[in-house]
Length: 381
Ligand code: GLA
Image (cartoon, rainbow, N blue to C red; front, side):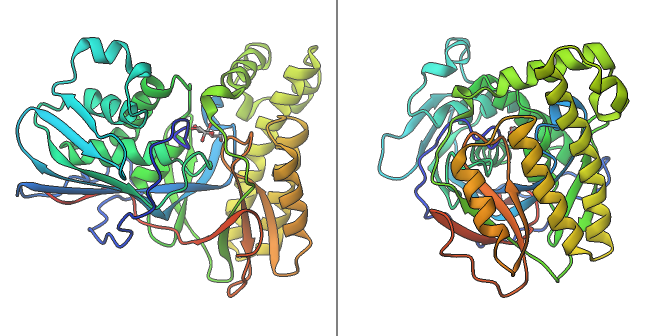
């Protein structure tokens, strides 16, 4: 899912996207708790998805990323009580779990049905939830599109089940849940973007230190997300293999985000060399992109997105032809500054930076104009 977006809870697309709870997340890693006070019986929690503007396949290598939380997301709403958790999503079979989630379930998460329940169960285990309830989950996020639908689900569930801590702690919890539920060894980017998002800002994250700072998105640009039409599941993809390759390259030249370029070019294995070159060059692009946003230079930002896509396509080899074609089509439009695949690749979506007022809704198999949103929060409860 996004989290690694690996799974697929039902996309019932009827989520309440109007959540307006206070955003208490700040760019300070010692941040304020995201749990809201009060304890009426009805609990509602909301978590956004995320789109990554630049910096892919760098998070697990200790590099830089620049995602933003978006105004599409997951709502969890239930009446609290008892030691059983029953959640519906759409008209399909509901999820039924005894709390605390028993060891037998924890060991066989991958068999749990409905399959989106694996993410719920993993979040419940991480929170240590003992009080359940009866309710529903809805989402406005496309599933399996690279917008972190599973991370969004995990964080919303964790908050609904009573998580109380900082955005960074929430993100780490979500990352552990994602590893357990999907088996995908994802980095921290998706969960931290979702936990710590701020309206009107992207988040520059140094994944080596897990420190982050908001970066204003100037009003000279709008962010569009365009679906390639190729649905993917990271669990089936070469994600883990790519991560392993970056680790093998780091054994040779040290941490890739800071590695010496000449050292990278002398890695004997040509595949590891290309993987390392992507990580190193992508981290540079993230820094330059953040500077371009800060100086309101969308032309440079767009060029960096194009270069990022080329690197993900040629050096990291995580693109597919439909993504490449979408990027070419978008780049040919005068109102588009730049476009690139976003997230893990292997299908999913392209992100484009466009002039305000552009209409890209006919491009790709689906299109969303997204706005940078506040992070995950409990709305009532
Ligand atoms: C997925 C993972 C993230 C990150 C991206 C690629 O979204 O969940 O941790 O690795 O792929 O940048």
